[in-house]
Length: 408
Image 1 (tube, rainbow, N blue to C red):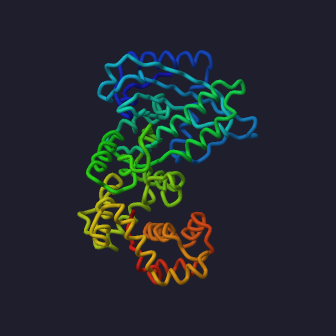
Image 2: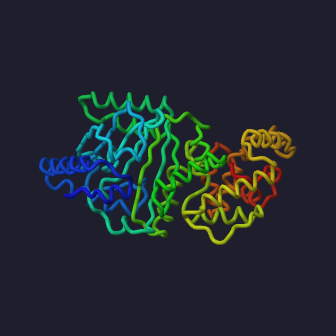
Image 3: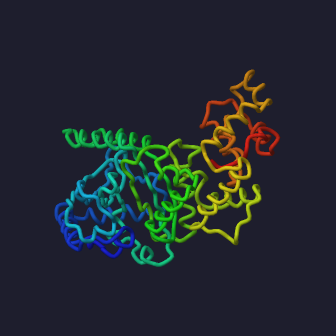
């Protein structure tokens, strides 16, 4: 089976041609030792590529008897070198590690190629599903204007060190990967994650994220890139899906964000609003509600920049500042001085909304979520004894009117 350098460079970036020859040699060796398994990997990915990454993939049969072929290839550049992406095609200071296993469903996470190097003392990892590099949907992936679903994951130096220790311990165990699931859970609960889509390359989109962060955007992902939530020890850039139409991208992103990175549902999530069509509707509704005038229609590729402008508009309108610390202090004051809340909170606090719930309910309502879905998710956020009548009064503006309707 042939490795496709053209797809690799479209999804990531150019490397030294020597790397591509060694990758092909590695694939040939896997094919020799495990005949037919590369085709199985490609077939498995073909089934998964049209779904979000959190949808489980199952083979027929008993779970304890079923395994999936998994091939992970890692290209690691010299950790002592401080590298830029533009330098990598000249560098030969790297090692390639190949790991083929057959894993049960509880440990199966797909097959990937990872490129890692250090930049400004932080590990940068770039990950792409191996299926694309083996020829899956090649024509669509290379087509101009096709969409990618991408994610960025940020780990603090302490969390990265803890994960490294766990992986080293697993590698030294005779029992193999028995402790891999607990390491994966640790990783998921100790990392910040953002999910997005673009019809540009993820690199172009990421550069725009970085520019917005440097200009002071208060969207959570841009704040994370400034190190406001934790120092950056490692940042992963993952091409989750590629070669998508806009409709496919929006539909998958909506599910992906809701299952992984919607901040109101996951404390470490960096997406402030749902993805996909729900996100487009949310920004449109917030623009109308706050009096922000949009210039023409916005698309999946421009919605975030419009969201940043709507957020800036609402913060300035309510607080005359975009300084997050000053805004949080003002919200705390308003909350404390809401006489209606204070009276009820001191007598029956368990059946009053928290601020997080108020903010989430307003966002989800703007996205078009049903009242039942909103209520079910609000109850997961805090152990409050709240009911549909309270939610409807909140959404009509009959309660908590003094708490600003802003995105922070």
